[in-house]
Image 1: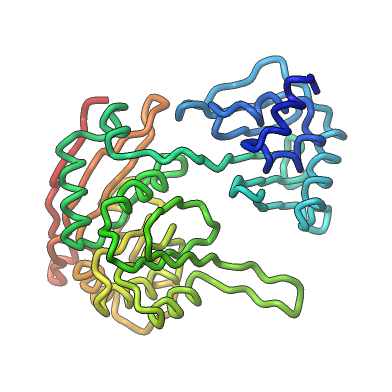
Image 2: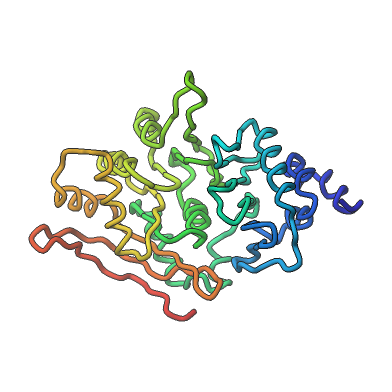
Length: 335
């Protein structure tokens, strides 16, 4: 580790990385590079980074397998977690919110897989997205109006398409007098509002400390008088509890879901509701979704860059034809 790197480690901006750098000396320069948002180690010789939304290979890297295994095990131990032959998958977090994910062989076929996703402390604005051609001015105005008029918005897209960033930005438009209850599986959002209650799910800790799920937090949130509920990501049965919340007067809420298109986001949301085991007819669930979700915003990554490609208004659901009545408010076709 160079003297310059040592100096950077002592810098307050890199305080959260103090813990892991001693185990990752060969890639310390990547960890400390603020322009890099993610480091992905596929094997000893395959290292990729994401910078400005573009993924690129890092040539000339050779991380001995034994060193990687030792590094991952030491990182897990220092984070109060564990990774071993019995538990070959690590999903942990640094103090600043940066994520550390790892898998050991033979689960990871080519060797140790390690991904470091840095917590982005920069607060982007809607103007930033317009300047980078991520969305159009028309889209920005429509989204702002949707937030102010308390539309329920579902943000869809694949991994790394900027859903979390967009949710952060849209939350800026929520009036300061509104009480927001934020629910996340892992704390990532950087919402800055005066009346904000942050909650985070908890994994089970041994036999004595049970898990606290997104479903648990959604049910609890209704007792704390939220004006709006924000769920970082819908992944399963928690979709039903969010649907219940939206149907009990919490208009203007926001969430994200993994999907390949805006229309598919509604199908994905429906399937998540079904995972709750609720005894409701399929078409009744879809009608309920149409009544609750007003706008779907879809994000994509194309040519290495992120774009908001579609704003879809959900008007109603026709049980006779088993289809949603939707209107495309805006579409971005120039990439």
